[in-house]
Image (tube, rainbow, N blue to C red; front, side):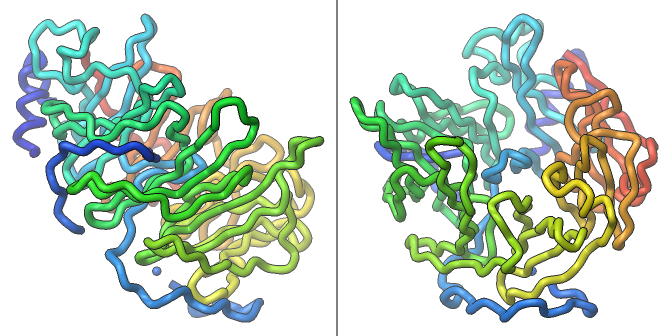
Length: 401
């Protein structure tokens, strides 16, 4: 695959360069099949019973339900969709070794403005799984479908289309072997009711099945634990339109659910950040960030700081990597590592300061976005140590059209 990408990069002026389904059609090729408690962990609650013993293939999280992250890279490079000033949407490929990003197109002098170009698209959602590139096209006019391409952008094929009253919603995608798991939004004609379903699609056979369904209850795929899916579910108050108390559950690959016990101090306003096999919680009563191990129920205090108590409703846990937490408090951006929390000179998404969002982990480095408003985005590679020290020691990614 790397040779194919290198051909794309070399041919561009020698530049060294989700899924939610119900009505299914599949013409695709089969895909091959494919957690910790610190020593000072304090048990603050009775451990929850583990879900049923592992019986399926382990899950891979491809897109989380809060849209914080998507699996958009391979060991060699990263894929992203750029919205150009003239409205075109172009797939760009970033080659880690050569530190360059180029349109995913090998045709000389291509304008990247039609479906004859491998970089051209009309969607903003993609993910990578088992050496394929997947693009999610969403619309309630009956045109919602999932497309699969080779990693060089070629050999497009539509592997599923949705019924006209159903649509993809950006609420998380996971995979286990040949099976994709996703949520579907179903709106019946003439009805104000909506149904959120969790479905499973086999990429080899095209078989689709609904494994769980809830009417008028928002539910999101927010993580994975071994062979199970972590689900967040909540309802919205009809009068105030505010989010009611959430539920978190473990769901097996047949739709069977096991509740995840939350600490008694959690309310509907508690900020909860799902992670790999864990939930991070903001305890505004004690002024702390707490990690809940989903499998054991153990709670571990990661950080304590008066500012976490001072701004109970203005604290947002943004992301967690390598036992570090990235958060906003009263519109200020903080990095929290080894129990220490310090204000950063960056912002995570957009703001007056330079962006600092982590896109991918590359061994002892991160791929980060430095500017979301350029086309394509401004990317860089930085060591993990320097990132958490809030330094600007970037290895810049060059852009080329």
